[in-house]
Amino acid sequence: MSNTTYNRGLFPKTRMRRNRKSPSLRGLVQESNLSTSSLIQPLFVMEGNKKSEPVDTMPGINRLSPDLILEEAKILSSLGISALAIFPAIEKSKKSLFCEEAHNPKGLIQQTIKLVKKYVPDLMLITDVALDPYTVHGHDGVLDQNGFIDNDETNKILTKQALSHAEAGADIVGPSDMMDGRILNLREAFEKNQFENTGIMAYSAKFASNYYGPFRSAIGTSQSSADIDKSSYQMDFHNSDEALHECALDLKEGADILLIKPGMPYLDIISKVKETFRVPTFAYQVSGEYSMHCLAIERKIFDKDAIIMESLTAFKRAGADAILTYFAKEAAQIIQKPGNSQYR
Image 1: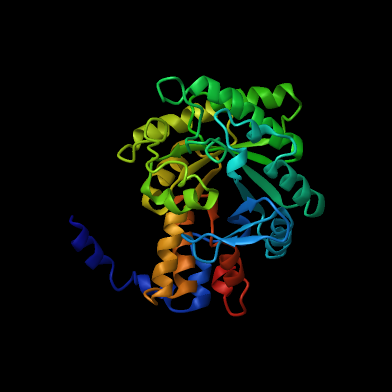
Image 2: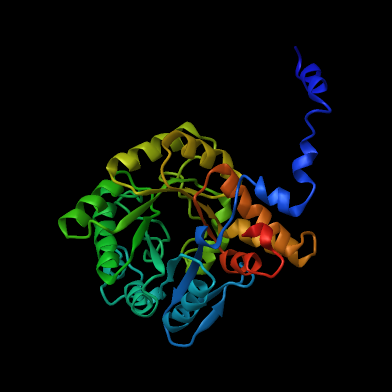
């Protein structure tokens, strides 16, 4: 029997619209729910005091000095947001070939972690473990004599960097570098140094994407090189089976959370990863996605609140447990608006 015949046989006993007739009923049968506890706000930290500097490519987003990061952290916590992810904008004078500043215990990220954890201890801090903010060339690792990323030497520095974050008080480190074997190195180092409770959110399926441009501008790596090709370590966006392979390896090496990046163009990957592994799976609505939405909102192509909530709910529907998004603060405010019970 064809589907058409089958549907005709059920009607009028089955009327799908019955469960859509009122906001209350739609809320009762809603399958995917977006809450403030599943939102993670990325923030960019810069040197200084009481300094705020707009990111030209990301409307409404600023680089903030640590004291202003703290003030923003307090606001985010009051809105019910559970975590923030911190990314550094390092001064050019502190960039180098071997990234010594990445694991400086008195460095920008390390001091920011200590400051926020002192005054907002319940807010989870996720830190970026990667070398691109610290290299003079903008790549995520150190180069060998042929100009190719040296995987194993890079892992040694990443391990030092991650340990410095854990020592400062980071709750979760997020290795975003895509070096082979770095999750195992970090996990073993944490166990050896009594940081067994420090989580690892592995950027397991991070694709070589065109959607990262605004982020690179925000952390100052777009100025390091006119053309930074990261295809030798970030994933080919044509591949999905490879993403599952990467995730399986990271879990075996000791990852606690899998992250998929970018977000909306890769909802199929999020869904496959969640269905395959049934472990905490996060998504990153990246800078390019954010900026495109902002431009459309500015031109009144989209209603701001509606498109933010729809885009973020798509991640939940695909299987993401939490979402890193530059809209986190605004989404939390939308959820808490009077009359927006459909989001609670």
